[in-house]
Image (cartoon, rainbow, N blue to C red; front, side, top):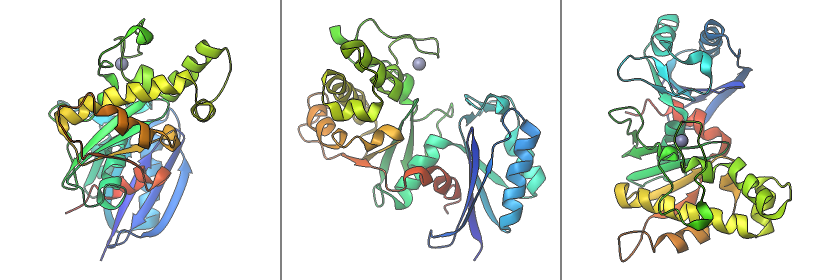
Length: 288
Ligand SMILES: [Zn+2]
């Protein structure tokens, strides 16, 4: 039985994992990302796969592959943008490669054998310096017509009230995006403007003040909108802010008032695979 090889192509490191037929890690390797160097990045991925040997290859990238052009788009590793990465990797490796957004890989990993194991519809959320998301249905990534399915971070925050104004500007060109309220820096910034204190997101959460109250309430509104559209079985949180314990009790308590249902069975869960979710999900892109 050959291996499932997963590659997580991050901005600072490239990580590779090989999963056996049972999903156990046969081996793991990592190298530094040749930042700014596209050809070097292709070589680095190719050599990692070469060292591991035979197996299917899935790659998670901080971006998406345009359905229109086949080129990488929306990547914060900007040297990948506009490049035919899938094609170049396939040529260099001599085998088919599946390329997918890293938030989608996170959702897939958690849906296949993580917190969402056994669930039919899983919405995976990354809460870090940015806010991303991915949808997995019956252990398959839902890519979407524009390759943006699950990208809820740049929807507007629902029902903005006086405490949410003025709408923050977002790097995407719009204002009031969910990401501008729910990313880690936003939580720290809000605490600073309310108290004058410099604290990291974890400390803000533990401090139990107004900033985290607002954060939890905004997340309830934002996820309620997802539940109303997608109605997932499970929502799994990942990224640095997923360690905030109270999210898992407070958000489901608050979201009922915004969800169009008398009873909400959707579960909000912490990820099981932590930092390994991206690379494991890339391996699971070959999941037939
Ligand atoms: Zn935005």
